[in-house]
Length: 471
Image 1 (cartoon, rainbow, N blue to C red):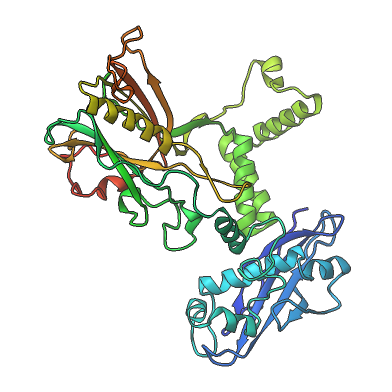
Image 2: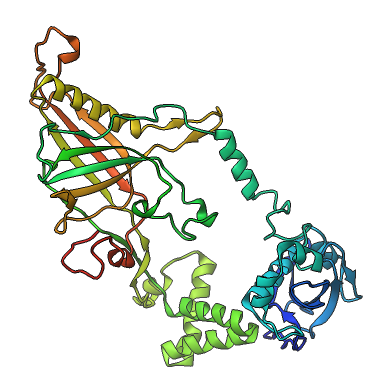
């Protein structure tokens, strides 16, 4: 017999009502459906208190129907203490205590409900307006935030398994400044007599800045593009001729094939309907989904029986063995996520003077040292290598007919000291002037973030222009 969750009628003007949530509690993981009704007292922004009532319903049995929503607990201090009614069992009381799973869920419900702006208070303010006017200290005073059970309060102890922002900052402070080179020779280039208007590649080495996952003023979803990040320190630039061996790029997006047969589609529709409308709605959706796919109730019954038989005997294709049939898998290619781009460049450098030989050695060392892992002031922590801005230049400006790059990490730096097939070096009485006759430098990079559609519109100097290839 299908279970049905009754409609909740405890909301009215001036009350902030949460959405329904289900939490398994106790050793038997009994599912308890619960929701909260919060009422603020006083006038904003100086609210003087609050009252949050928790209503619950529990199933009468494995296949029984649900009773009505019943008031089970009331708190006026955000959950630090609760006054329970007779409807609250021992499992419920434990789960509503500090650190209990329902207590955490309930506090998150209150915060979510207020932020959504559901309901109004006595002054006609929505929940959103209330949050904008109440400071965190006032929210604590009003009982909207409880330090003992809140999962969203930064000053709370929180879940022992989750790091707080203060703990992360403590690690940052302990790591301190990286140990190693922080000043590089400026404006390195090969050849040293290259014409500035000649087409070339420019590598700008910058100190890595983390995205911080939205903590602080940076992008709240992904890392900020290096070209727009004013906080990154530029260490030096390296200019090289166009790479040998060709110039290519490859933009990729991750799509994967996925199947969903009628039975699985029915279960999926039932799950979505259950979330939206309860158990009975899910069961009805599953039935209608299968019957719509098969156009025949008898076929529906047979398919369910075959699926059950396969599970019983541990066979994956019983229908194929018995009848030479297969359930339509509805195979489809579905978007799975973006992919990061990688690039490789090869440069052959042949020094033609003592000064140019020193420049080549400096360029190679700078690439190698910049990509190296940095020690921190703590023996327990390491800091990220430096990163790179890369650009193709023509007449000192970005190429309109070659691709652009986002901020990159140098993942591999290979040097072939004998690119002509045998050992050869210049003869010079000064060891500082000696050099290999040629070096072949191969660099492999990965971009730090994917390419998005709006990146093409936000290119500096190329907005809304199809005359630039872009990324």
